[in-house]
Length: 411
Image (cartoon, rainbow, N blue to C red; front, side, top):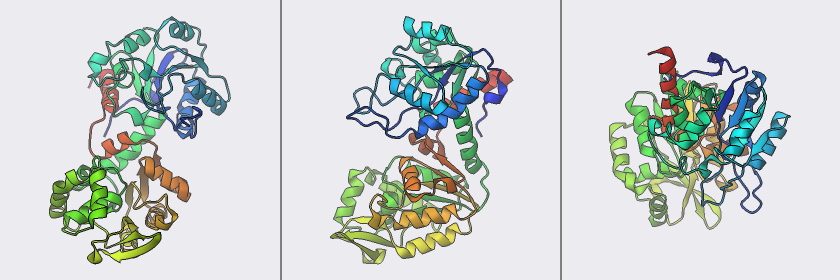
Protein backbone atom coordinates (compact mmCIF):
# COMPACT_ATOMS: atom_id res chain seq x y z
CA UNK A 1 0.00 0.00 0.00
CA UNK A 2 1.28 3.44 -0.91
CA UNK A 3 2.26 5.52 2.13
CA UNK A 4 1.97 9.26 1.69
CA UNK A 5 1.04 12.49 3.42
CA UNK A 6 -2.28 14.16 2.65
CA UNK A 7 -3.59 17.71 2.90
CA UNK A 8 -4.63 16.90 6.48
CA UNK A 9 -0.99 16.49 7.53
CA UNK A 10 0.34 19.96 6.65
CA UNK A 11 -0.36 23.57 7.59
CA UNK A 12 -1.19 25.63 4.50
CA UNK A 13 -2.08 28.97 6.08
CA UNK A 14 -0.11 31.70 4.33
CA UNK A 15 2.05 29.13 2.53
CA UNK A 16 2.87 29.16 -1.19
CA UNK A 17 1.90 25.84 -2.72
CA UNK A 18 3.02 24.33 -6.02
CA UNK A 19 0.06 22.22 -7.16
CA UNK A 20 0.39 19.66 -9.96
CA UNK A 21 -3.04 18.52 -11.19
CA UNK A 22 -3.89 17.05 -14.60
CA UNK A 23 -5.65 19.67 -16.71
CA UNK A 24 -5.00 17.76 -19.95
CA UNK A 25 -8.54 17.77 -21.36
CA UNK A 26 -10.20 17.18 -24.75
CA UNK A 27 -9.72 20.22 -26.99
CA UNK A 28 -11.44 21.17 -30.23
CA UNK A 29 -8.42 21.34 -32.57
CA UNK A 30 -10.12 23.93 -34.77
CA UNK A 31 -11.04 26.42 -32.07
CA UNK A 32 -8.82 25.50 -29.13
CA UNK A 33 -11.93 25.41 -26.94
CA UNK A 34 -12.26 22.95 -24.06
CA UNK A 35 -14.70 20.17 -24.98
CA UNK A 36 -14.85 18.31 -21.63
CA UNK A 37 -13.77 19.89 -18.32
CA UNK A 38 -14.31 16.82 -16.10
CA UNK A 39 -10.70 16.69 -14.96
CA UNK A 40 -10.62 20.39 -14.16
CA UNK A 41 -13.79 19.98 -12.09
CA UNK A 42 -12.25 17.06 -10.19
CA UNK A 43 -9.15 19.03 -9.24
CA UNK A 44 -11.20 22.10 -8.35
CA UNK A 45 -12.11 20.36 -5.08
CA UNK A 46 -8.46 20.28 -4.00
CA UNK A 47 -7.90 23.85 -5.18
CA UNK A 48 -10.94 25.16 -3.32
CA UNK A 49 -9.89 23.43 -0.10
CA UNK A 50 -6.35 24.79 -0.28
CA UNK A 51 -7.72 28.26 -0.99
CA UNK A 52 -10.04 28.03 2.01
CA UNK A 53 -7.04 27.04 4.15
CA UNK A 54 -5.30 30.29 3.15
CA UNK A 55 -2.73 28.86 0.77
CA UNK A 56 -1.26 30.81 -2.12
CA UNK A 57 -1.71 28.32 -4.96
CA UNK A 58 0.56 28.12 -8.01
CA UNK A 59 -0.67 25.57 -10.55
CA UNK A 60 1.63 23.68 -12.90
CA UNK A 61 -0.28 21.84 -15.62
CA UNK A 62 -0.02 20.71 -19.22
CA UNK A 63 -2.24 20.46 -22.30
CA UNK A 64 -1.07 17.97 -24.91
CA UNK A 65 2.49 17.54 -26.14
CA UNK A 66 4.44 19.96 -28.34
CA UNK A 67 3.76 19.13 -31.96
CA UNK A 68 0.42 17.40 -31.32
CA UNK A 69 -2.98 18.78 -32.32
CA UNK A 70 -4.21 19.26 -28.76
CA UNK A 71 -1.11 21.12 -27.57
CA UNK A 72 -1.72 24.62 -26.22
CA UNK A 73 1.20 26.62 -24.87
CA UNK A 74 -1.14 29.11 -23.26
CA UNK A 75 -3.49 27.75 -20.59
CA UNK A 76 -5.50 30.97 -20.36
CA UNK A 77 -8.71 29.19 -21.35
CA UNK A 78 -8.10 26.61 -18.64
CA UNK A 79 -7.75 29.45 -16.11
CA UNK A 80 -11.01 30.97 -17.34
CA UNK A 81 -12.82 27.66 -17.09
CA UNK A 82 -11.39 27.03 -13.60
CA UNK A 83 -12.51 30.52 -12.54
CA UNK A 84 -16.09 29.69 -13.53
CA UNK A 85 -15.99 26.39 -11.63
CA UNK A 86 -14.50 27.90 -8.45
CA UNK A 87 -16.63 31.02 -8.51
CA UNK A 88 -13.68 33.40 -8.18
CA UNK A 89 -10.95 34.68 -10.47
CA UNK A 90 -7.94 32.50 -11.22
CA UNK A 91 -4.98 34.57 -12.37
CA UNK A 92 -2.98 33.51 -15.39
CA UNK A 93 0.53 34.46 -16.50
CA UNK A 94 2.01 33.39 -19.83
CA UNK A 95 5.30 32.43 -18.24
CA UNK A 96 6.74 29.52 -16.28
CA UNK A 97 10.01 30.31 -14.49
CA UNK A 98 10.85 33.80 -15.78
CA UNK A 99 10.50 37.19 -14.13
CA UNK A 100 6.79 37.51 -15.02
CA UNK A 101 5.97 34.20 -13.30
CA UNK A 102 8.08 34.91 -10.22
CA UNK A 103 6.59 38.40 -9.87
CA UNK A 104 3.03 37.07 -10.19
CA UNK A 105 3.77 34.45 -7.53
CA UNK A 106 5.14 37.10 -5.16
CA UNK A 107 1.92 39.11 -5.51
CA UNK A 108 -0.41 36.22 -4.64
CA UNK A 109 -2.62 36.81 -1.60
CA UNK A 110 -3.71 34.03 0.79
CA UNK A 111 -6.45 32.06 -0.95
CA UNK A 112 -5.32 33.28 -4.38
CA UNK A 113 -4.81 30.97 -7.35
CA UNK A 114 -2.33 31.41 -10.22
CA UNK A 115 -2.01 29.18 -13.27
CA UNK A 116 1.28 29.24 -15.17
CA UNK A 117 1.68 28.43 -18.87
CA UNK A 118 1.94 24.85 -20.14
CA UNK A 119 4.72 23.19 -18.15
CA UNK A 120 5.56 21.06 -21.21
CA UNK A 121 6.67 24.22 -23.00
CA UNK A 122 9.91 23.89 -21.00
CA UNK A 123 12.50 21.33 -22.19
CA UNK A 124 13.05 20.08 -18.61
CA UNK A 125 9.54 18.70 -18.46
CA UNK A 126 9.65 16.45 -21.52
CA UNK A 127 12.56 14.35 -20.26
CA UNK A 128 12.14 11.12 -18.32
CA UNK A 129 14.79 11.33 -15.60
CA UNK A 130 15.34 10.26 -11.96
CA UNK A 131 13.77 12.51 -9.30
CA UNK A 132 17.20 13.55 -7.99
CA UNK A 133 18.13 14.87 -11.43
CA UNK A 134 14.79 16.65 -11.87
CA UNK A 135 15.24 18.27 -8.44
CA UNK A 136 18.15 20.20 -10.01
CA UNK A 137 16.16 21.24 -13.10
CA UNK A 138 15.34 24.88 -13.76
CA UNK A 139 11.61 24.31 -13.23
CA UNK A 140 12.04 22.74 -9.81
CA UNK A 141 15.00 24.77 -8.53
CA UNK A 142 13.52 28.17 -9.43
CA UNK A 143 9.97 27.48 -8.24
CA UNK A 144 11.11 25.72 -5.06
CA UNK A 145 12.82 28.93 -3.95
CA UNK A 146 9.48 30.77 -3.89
CA UNK A 147 7.32 27.94 -2.53
CA UNK A 148 6.78 26.14 0.75
CA UNK A 149 4.83 22.97 -0.12
CA UNK A 150 4.27 20.71 -3.13
CA UNK A 151 0.92 18.99 -3.69
CA UNK A 152 0.64 16.26 -6.33
CA UNK A 153 -3.00 15.85 -7.28
CA UNK A 154 -2.69 14.36 -10.77
CA UNK A 155 -2.71 10.59 -10.46
CA UNK A 156 -3.12 10.50 -14.23
CA UNK A 157 0.36 12.04 -14.66
CA UNK A 158 1.99 9.97 -11.92
CA UNK A 159 3.34 7.39 -14.39
CA UNK A 160 5.61 10.08 -15.89
CA UNK A 161 8.99 10.75 -14.28
CA UNK A 162 8.81 14.39 -15.31
CA UNK A 163 10.18 17.40 -13.44
CA UNK A 164 6.81 18.76 -12.29
CA UNK A 165 5.73 15.31 -11.09
CA UNK A 166 8.74 13.96 -9.18
CA UNK A 167 11.28 16.77 -8.69
CA UNK A 168 9.62 18.80 -5.95
CA UNK A 169 9.38 15.84 -3.55
CA UNK A 170 13.15 16.24 -3.05
CA UNK A 171 13.03 19.97 -2.40
CA UNK A 172 9.75 20.69 -0.58
CA UNK A 173 7.43 19.06 1.96
CA UNK A 174 5.06 17.13 -0.31
CA UNK A 175 1.65 15.51 -0.06
CA UNK A 176 -1.16 14.08 -2.15
CA UNK A 177 -4.12 16.24 -3.10
CA UNK A 178 -7.68 14.96 -2.68
CA UNK A 179 -7.93 13.47 -6.20
CA UNK A 180 -4.64 11.61 -5.79
CA UNK A 181 -5.57 10.49 -2.28
CA UNK A 182 -8.95 9.11 -3.37
CA UNK A 183 -7.44 7.33 -6.35
CA UNK A 184 -4.72 5.58 -4.39
CA UNK A 185 -7.03 4.54 -1.56
CA UNK A 186 -9.68 3.24 -3.96
CA UNK A 187 -7.21 1.23 -6.03
CA UNK A 188 -5.29 -0.07 -3.03
CA UNK A 189 -8.58 -1.42 -1.67
CA UNK A 190 -8.68 -3.93 -4.53
CA UNK A 191 -4.93 -4.32 -5.02
CA UNK A 192 -4.04 -5.12 -1.42
CA UNK A 193 -6.68 -7.32 0.20
CA UNK A 194 -9.83 -7.22 -1.95
CA UNK A 195 -13.03 -8.61 -0.54
CA UNK A 196 -13.59 -11.97 -2.21
CA UNK A 197 -14.70 -13.13 -4.68
CA UNK A 198 -12.87 -10.52 -6.75
CA UNK A 199 -13.77 -10.36 -10.45
CA UNK A 200 -11.83 -8.37 -13.08
CA UNK A 201 -13.55 -7.45 -16.33
CA UNK A 202 -10.96 -6.71 -19.03
CA UNK A 203 -11.69 -5.55 -22.54
CA UNK A 204 -10.92 -2.65 -24.81
CA UNK A 205 -8.79 -2.26 -27.88
CA UNK A 206 -5.39 -1.35 -26.42
CA UNK A 207 -2.69 -3.99 -26.14
CA UNK A 208 -0.51 -2.33 -23.51
CA UNK A 209 -0.32 -4.34 -20.29
CA UNK A 210 -3.26 -6.59 -21.28
CA UNK A 211 -1.58 -9.93 -20.59
CA UNK A 212 0.66 -8.65 -17.78
CA UNK A 213 -2.44 -7.31 -16.03
CA UNK A 214 -4.02 -10.78 -16.04
CA UNK A 215 -0.80 -12.36 -14.85
CA UNK A 216 -0.49 -9.82 -12.03
CA UNK A 217 -4.03 -10.25 -10.71
CA UNK A 218 -4.00 -14.04 -10.82
CA UNK A 219 -0.32 -14.59 -10.01
CA UNK A 220 -0.65 -12.50 -6.85
CA UNK A 221 -3.81 -14.35 -5.85
CA UNK A 222 -5.85 -11.14 -5.98
CA UNK A 223 -8.55 -12.03 -8.50
CA UNK A 224 -10.75 -15.11 -8.61
CA UNK A 225 -11.89 -14.66 -12.20
CA UNK A 226 -10.89 -12.58 -15.22
CA UNK A 227 -13.75 -12.00 -17.66
CA UNK A 228 -12.51 -10.95 -21.09
CA UNK A 229 -13.95 -9.26 -24.14
CA UNK A 230 -12.85 -6.76 -26.76
CA UNK A 231 -9.53 -7.45 -28.46
CA UNK A 232 -7.96 -9.06 -25.39
CA UNK A 233 -10.80 -11.60 -25.47
CA UNK A 234 -10.12 -12.25 -29.15
CA UNK A 235 -6.39 -12.64 -28.49
CA UNK A 236 -7.12 -15.29 -25.87
CA UNK A 237 -9.48 -17.11 -28.22
CA UNK A 238 -6.70 -17.14 -30.81
CA UNK A 239 -4.26 -18.39 -28.18
CA UNK A 240 -6.64 -21.24 -27.35
CA UNK A 241 -6.23 -22.54 -30.90
CA UNK A 242 -9.29 -21.05 -32.56
CA UNK A 243 -9.11 -19.58 -36.06
CA UNK A 244 -10.89 -16.20 -35.90
CA UNK A 245 -10.69 -15.48 -39.61
CA UNK A 246 -8.20 -13.30 -41.46
CA UNK A 247 -10.19 -10.07 -41.05
CA UNK A 248 -10.09 -10.40 -37.24
CA UNK A 249 -6.45 -11.53 -37.07
CA UNK A 250 -5.49 -8.47 -39.11
CA UNK A 251 -7.20 -6.21 -36.56
CA UNK A 252 -5.27 -7.89 -33.73
CA UNK A 253 -2.05 -7.43 -35.66
CA UNK A 254 -2.78 -3.77 -36.44
CA UNK A 255 -3.53 -2.99 -32.80
CA UNK A 256 -0.36 -4.69 -31.54
CA UNK A 257 -1.92 -7.73 -29.87
CA UNK A 258 -0.25 -10.53 -31.85
CA UNK A 259 3.13 -9.91 -30.20
CA UNK A 260 1.51 -11.05 -26.94
CA UNK A 261 0.23 -14.32 -28.39
CA UNK A 262 2.81 -16.54 -26.63
CA UNK A 263 2.09 -14.81 -23.33
CA UNK A 264 -1.63 -15.40 -23.87
CA UNK A 265 -0.99 -19.10 -24.49
CA UNK A 266 0.95 -19.31 -21.23
CA UNK A 267 -1.76 -17.46 -19.31
CA UNK A 268 -4.43 -19.91 -20.47
CA UNK A 269 -2.19 -22.83 -19.50
CA UNK A 270 -1.24 -21.44 -16.10
CA UNK A 271 -4.64 -20.12 -15.03
CA UNK A 272 -6.95 -22.67 -16.61
CA UNK A 273 -10.56 -22.01 -15.58
CA UNK A 274 -9.88 -18.63 -13.97
CA UNK A 275 -9.61 -16.72 -17.26
CA UNK A 276 -12.98 -16.70 -19.00
CA UNK A 277 -13.17 -16.11 -22.75
CA UNK A 278 -16.28 -15.57 -24.89
CA UNK A 279 -18.28 -18.65 -25.86
CA UNK A 280 -20.09 -16.70 -28.56
CA UNK A 281 -19.51 -13.44 -30.40
CA UNK A 282 -21.46 -10.87 -32.39
CA UNK A 283 -20.19 -10.02 -35.87
CA UNK A 284 -21.06 -7.24 -38.27
CA UNK A 285 -22.58 -9.11 -41.21
CA UNK A 286 -23.22 -6.43 -43.81
CA UNK A 287 -24.66 -4.03 -41.24
CA UNK A 288 -26.52 -6.63 -39.17
CA UNK A 289 -25.64 -7.97 -35.71
CA UNK A 290 -25.29 -11.74 -36.07
CA UNK A 291 -24.25 -13.94 -33.15
CA UNK A 292 -22.01 -16.96 -33.68
CA UNK A 293 -20.76 -19.66 -31.35
CA UNK A 294 -16.97 -19.60 -31.19
CA UNK A 295 -17.20 -23.18 -32.49
CA UNK A 296 -18.51 -21.72 -35.75
CA UNK A 297 -15.44 -19.56 -36.27
CA UNK A 298 -13.56 -18.54 -38.41
CA UNK A 299 -15.70 -15.71 -39.70
CA UNK A 300 -15.14 -13.48 -42.70
CA UNK A 301 -16.95 -10.73 -40.80
CA UNK A 302 -15.44 -8.55 -38.03
CA UNK A 303 -16.09 -9.54 -34.43
CA UNK A 304 -17.70 -6.55 -32.71
CA UNK A 305 -19.11 -7.76 -29.37
CA UNK A 306 -19.58 -10.70 -27.06
CA UNK A 307 -22.72 -12.77 -27.57
CA UNK A 308 -25.77 -13.49 -25.45
CA UNK A 309 -24.51 -16.77 -23.95
CA UNK A 310 -21.27 -15.08 -22.90
CA UNK A 311 -23.23 -12.21 -21.36
CA UNK A 312 -25.32 -14.66 -19.29
CA UNK A 313 -22.24 -16.61 -18.20
CA UNK A 314 -20.41 -13.45 -17.13
CA UNK A 315 -23.45 -12.07 -15.30
CA UNK A 316 -23.69 -15.23 -13.25
CA UNK A 317 -20.09 -14.87 -12.10
CA UNK A 318 -20.56 -11.16 -11.38
CA UNK A 319 -23.64 -11.85 -9.23
CA UNK A 320 -21.44 -13.56 -6.60
CA UNK A 321 -18.63 -10.97 -6.61
CA UNK A 322 -17.79 -8.77 -3.62
CA UNK A 323 -15.11 -6.73 -5.46
CA UNK A 324 -15.10 -5.83 -9.16
CA UNK A 325 -12.63 -3.97 -11.35
CA UNK A 326 -13.64 -2.92 -14.87
CA UNK A 327 -11.11 -1.86 -17.49
CA UNK A 328 -12.22 -1.57 -21.09
CA UNK A 329 -15.51 -2.16 -22.93
CA UNK A 330 -16.47 -5.66 -24.11
CA UNK A 331 -17.17 -4.59 -27.69
CA UNK A 332 -17.56 -1.65 -30.03
CA UNK A 333 -19.82 0.26 -27.64
CA UNK A 334 -19.85 3.37 -29.85
CA UNK A 335 -22.12 1.46 -32.26
CA UNK A 336 -25.62 0.87 -30.84
CA UNK A 337 -25.75 -2.53 -32.54
CA UNK A 338 -22.75 -3.70 -30.55
CA UNK A 339 -23.16 -2.01 -27.18
CA UNK A 340 -25.17 -4.88 -25.69
CA UNK A 341 -22.25 -6.77 -24.15
CA UNK A 342 -20.74 -3.68 -22.53
CA UNK A 343 -24.13 -2.41 -21.40
CA UNK A 344 -25.27 -5.67 -19.81
CA UNK A 345 -21.99 -6.45 -18.07
CA UNK A 346 -21.37 -2.91 -16.81
CA UNK A 347 -24.94 -2.75 -15.54
CA UNK A 348 -24.59 -6.10 -13.78
CA UNK A 349 -21.42 -4.86 -12.09
CA UNK A 350 -23.03 -1.56 -11.05
CA UNK A 351 -26.05 -3.30 -9.53
CA UNK A 352 -24.16 -6.21 -7.94
CA UNK A 353 -23.69 -4.59 -4.54
CA UNK A 354 -19.94 -5.25 -4.81
CA UNK A 355 -17.23 -2.64 -4.36
CA UNK A 356 -16.89 -1.68 -8.01
CA UNK A 357 -14.07 0.33 -9.64
CA UNK A 358 -13.83 1.37 -13.28
CA UNK A 359 -11.03 3.13 -15.10
CA UNK A 360 -9.50 4.00 -18.44
CA UNK A 361 -10.67 6.46 -21.09
CA UNK A 362 -13.02 4.14 -22.99
CA UNK A 363 -14.42 2.71 -19.77
CA UNK A 364 -15.35 6.16 -18.50
CA UNK A 365 -16.84 7.12 -21.87
CA UNK A 366 -18.94 3.94 -21.94
CA UNK A 367 -20.13 4.46 -18.35
CA UNK A 368 -21.11 8.03 -19.19
CA UNK A 369 -22.99 6.91 -22.30
CA UNK A 370 -24.85 4.25 -20.32
CA UNK A 371 -25.59 6.57 -17.38
CA UNK A 372 -23.81 4.24 -14.98
CA UNK A 373 -20.87 6.29 -13.77
CA UNK A 374 -22.55 7.30 -10.52
CA UNK A 375 -23.51 3.68 -9.83
CA UNK A 376 -19.87 2.57 -9.52
CA UNK A 377 -18.08 2.88 -6.17
CA UNK A 378 -15.20 4.73 -7.82
CA UNK A 379 -14.39 5.75 -11.39
CA UNK A 380 -10.85 6.77 -12.33
CA UNK A 381 -10.35 9.45 -14.98
CA UNK A 382 -6.73 8.36 -15.40
CA UNK A 383 -5.70 6.46 -18.51
CA UNK A 384 -2.15 5.16 -18.73
CA UNK A 385 -1.45 5.64 -15.01
CA UNK A 386 -4.53 3.59 -14.12
CA UNK A 387 -3.42 0.72 -16.38
CA UNK A 388 0.15 0.87 -15.08
CA UNK A 389 -0.91 0.86 -11.44
CA UNK A 390 -3.38 -2.02 -11.69
CA UNK A 391 -0.73 -3.98 -13.62
CA UNK A 392 1.53 -3.85 -10.58
CA UNK A 393 3.92 -1.20 -11.92
CA UNK A 394 5.46 1.34 -9.61
CA UNK A 395 4.51 4.89 -10.58
CA UNK A 396 7.25 7.55 -10.28
CA UNK A 397 4.80 10.12 -8.88
CA UNK A 398 3.63 7.73 -6.17
CA UNK A 399 7.21 6.81 -5.31
CA UNK A 400 8.04 10.51 -4.99
CA UNK A 401 5.23 10.96 -2.46
CA UNK A 402 6.49 7.92 -0.55
CA UNK A 403 9.99 9.43 -0.44
CA UNK A 404 8.53 12.64 0.99
CA UNK A 405 6.56 10.61 3.55
CA UNK A 406 9.64 8.69 4.70
CA UNK A 407 11.61 11.93 5.02
CA UNK A 408 9.01 13.37 7.40
CA UNK A 409 8.40 10.15 9.31
CA UNK A 410 12.11 9.23 9.38
CA UNK A 411 11.25 5.69 8.30
